[in-house]
Image (tube, rainbow over all chains, first blue to last red):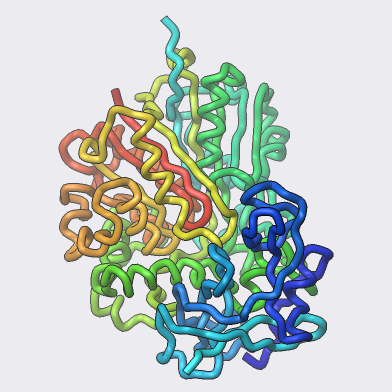
Length: 134
Length: 386
């Protein structure tokens, strides 16, 4: 996937998530009152409605909850096939990240695989991709 | 005695095609005229308009005509109208209209959905897509990972069924094969040629486990349903179809944070609003923008247990036109075209009125279920002919 990816527009609420990779950190919004994680990040906790929320760094590992192998070129420059997965993030119950599983053949990915974050920088954005843990 | 129920009365549909040149407002007018004629209503008797998702300036092919535009263009004197995407999917527009007539806010509401995606794609000079240098909103959580289509999002739910419940490609194929077989009997269907299992199995993969024939395709068309108040039925000449129950849901407006698609809570909830049971349903018209969504709806509505959808449709006999639960008798979106939700309600009314001609379900069907939505949004309607 050498072609540039669509990048998120950064704002006060999502910046910690999209730039934590500069310090090799996966950062998720977290509620200091009830300990719930809030993703997508918002300035209020969807569990207890507290406004006492802030980004928190998590371990950066997780499990493949489900996935698909994308074969369709949605634009001419797209290199296929590649894996799109939904990763359940360790230490952040209920948070799933849509991502890509990289660093292995597409046939090697399965539900339940243990994975670890690897950041891919484009412009000022650090995309959290995941690779399999051997 | 007053009748506080809401009914679908006139229904209409424009030409269905790809790369049509007739203006989308005129396609909408075609569908409106057909619906008015069937109900024997005049445009001056229409006092409400409802649509999903309203005019979408940034994506005109997806929704080229808005409710306010239709009100103005057709000279409708409206006492109520609504249009927007923030509702429980396409048929949410019908739910809103039913709520409005039951509250006395209007007597006869035009509900419409006009799509022009094939034409817009073919004529970008007329229907430009604005270029954006960055994405925001919900798409920022998927687009950066090149998860650019609902195909890739739906495929991940389907993959869990493959891995967890053993859903096979041969089972999933029955949605497309059934739809295409029925579409061959529907003069307005976009694709009239039947599909074989061999063709399905050899089709190229789009996003596993979904292949080319598991996906609907861009279509140009307009579909109209008139929702009328129970105490205004004396103004209508066609057989009224009662909206016996409605349900809809949204939890996370997200394709990845929700454990399951919204059809599951919606399907369970529908039966809490009625004494009818799944076994009373004579035909099911279930959203199949992607084939797996129809499998999920069959489970969600209780026609089979969760995880059993693949085995329920295996072989295709049960959901065939002459089966015990005829499914998507007009062809579904995979066969009849991407009418975007409204086609399912339109067909349910056709079948309950016995107007299906070559594709008519036998045995005088009286109860039909129709749905829209396939991800974080869902709507289900139970329709009955009394």
